[in-house]
Amino acid sequence: MLRTAASAATGSIANTLAINGDRLMQMMTDVGAIGALPNGGVRRLAFSPEDRQARQLVQSWMETAGMTVTIDAAANIIGRYEGRFPHAPALATGSHLDTVPNAGIYDGTYGVLAGVEVARTLYEQGIRPDHPIEVIVFADEERTMIGSKAMAGKASLEPNFYDHPHYEPIEMGLSFIGGNWSQLPSARRDTDGLAAFVELHVEQGPVLEAADNPMGLVTGIVGQRRYLITIDGSASHAGTTPMPMRQDALVAASEIILAVNRIGNKTGDGYGDQVATVGAMKLSPNVANTIPGRVEMTLDIRDLSNQRLDAMISELEEVMGAIATQTHTQISLKPQLRNEPVPVNSHIYNAIAQVCDQLQLPVQPLPSRASHDAQIIASITDMGMIFVPSQDGISHSETEYTTPEHCIQGANILLHTLLKLDQHYRCPEEVTALKKKSKV
Ligand code: HGY
Ligand code: MN
Ligand code: MN
Image 1 (cartoon, rainbow, N blue to C red):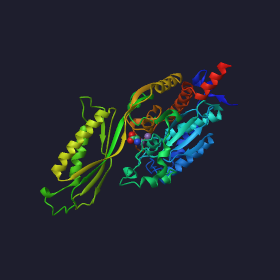
Image 2: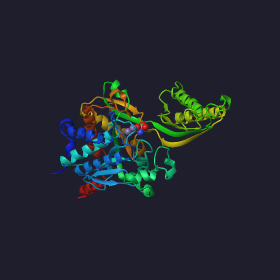
Image 3: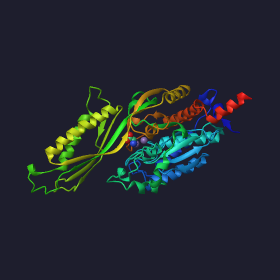
């Protein structure tokens, strides 16, 4: 017998409905084994065979959870659990399965699998919400965010925008996991197809643990800008080239890295929350007895304020101009990614807070200093985020860890938040039906 979400969400919420915690943690272990590294970490780069394998496994679990599964042109997997009103906008959740080169098993994967477990719980309990519930696996969150950007209609349609010395062309990557570059614009969703998007994620930072491990009520997501910095000097003999005659690209790069660090550490005048990182570098020809002629390196800056991000970039451009003159090199800055800082929607924030209160879980409001697909999807629908604590605040590392208890608590918060939002957003058909009834 199918029950409506309203009937499932009434009564004392704390002891009615709960996800199957053992099954969630088993799914985490199974996906964590795909791309497992000898050091206990995981490598599941976007568009890799491991990425494809994990996606296929999750798709099979979605089908077991009574969901229909589609893949859009941006290779986003969309699992859909039908509601009572099939034409109503969907309540969506999800995250990503791709990882950084040396990752833990929680970043992204946890939010995807918790969403699948929520749908399976509703399916097994015979609960049919008013709205369809969708679980989305976004393509390539860690580098280009092309999945969520295409869904929000914000992806660059220039393939070379995604070019990077370490990765294959975007067209190949997408088709390897079921996408289709030539149809990319078709991945865009119109705003009335989604009622809300709620992402569940590990905090990846130290704040919740320092506050004795409450659940995280995310207030907003920082803005992020990522660039490829290229420095061109002149590769010449390390023995015969006098120091004053050198155009050493690595010396210029080192000066830039120290300037980035200085800007990241600025305080006063509103500064203090920003971060700035050079995380990857490739130099050539990269041999002991030749002066480096070229350096390519990444720049990643983040802050809750766009004005401060603008100011940081203009300060850095000025400094790079001076370094180029001083070192007789050419320096260029190519934008690779830009995410706007976004606040969460207050009614979703309040729904999460009410559910935590009803489940008697302590909470802590905090901004997300990591980027997430949620901040891209925020441009086409209402958005909220739930965090669970990260042990030692570590992520993007093999020592990333969140306790099973926190994982299960977070998934139950997601379950009940979606049921609460199911009541919050009225379905158009339901409103029509109610109106008709009242006319009788
Ligand atoms: O970079 C980030 O914040 C995310 O992990 N992709
Ligand atoms: Mn993530
Ligand atoms: Mn990440």
